Length: 256
Ligand code: G
Ligand code: G
Ligand code: MN
Ligand code: NA
Image 1 (tube, rainbow, N blue to C red):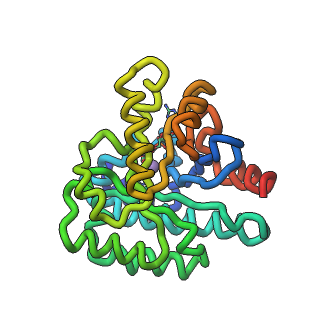
Image 2 (cartoon, rainbow, N blue to C red; image 1 turned 90 degrees about the horizontal axis):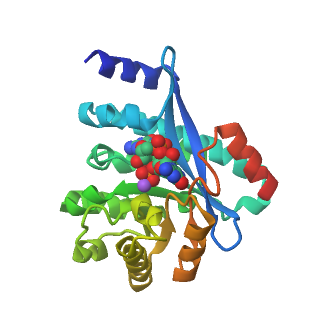
């Protein structure tokens, strides 16, 4: 209870910070997108990663205002980068949505309001949902996801491959991007099963006309293996760590 109250105060009191991890074209290393990743600049404990507070936020519902804060802050920052850079047209912004956020009846108006307020273009935004959302999608959820698609927003399935998504479900949902979970990318060189999962997701993307993004690339060999499979986009420490806003902005200004 005390930690929940502390977390809610952090959202209201500007203790949260958004970092941005670039996703690159694997063939060239060019930045194609940035993923917003929240941090908590705790007055006593220092900079905390989401692993230290997202589960609590999800259990208590605090993730709903937290997630809206992250979306607003990320759209505002990214709209600022785009403003002075005519070449930045193709640059995308990805933001994580928690299952609790997806379950909110007012999800679509919340997103629309934030896009209107920040001026960030909906067709440059990707919202990442978890595989559990896909598995449990009821008609109301599917309707909300379709309404986001109708705004021009792309929808990605994060950590894909870990949650046994039924393929029939996946095909019926308005999903446009599959993100291969880091655990499979990590094993790509020496674990034949992990490698097979990566290949399967790339083929699934081709079959369903979805983009595929590989996560957690830490070595040149992993990047090469993914390119050879036909995976075009990736992110990971080999290319870029999550960057504080100023550093992400500087990187984008250098490229665009
Ligand atoms: O930044 P880091 O690699 O530590 O992120 C750990 C986990 O926290 C990831 O699974 C990521 O999806 C999740 N995460 C990061 N930022 C957000 C956010 O703003 N909202 C939600 N729901 N999850 C996030
Ligand atoms: O689950 P999601 O993809 O939203 O979370 C991204 C998380 O993965 C962040 O916490 C980020 O710091 C972490 N991450 C990103 N790239 C790498 C990587 O190459 N290696 C490892 N170990 N973690 C990574
Ligand atoms: Mn993600
Ligand atoms: Na992920």
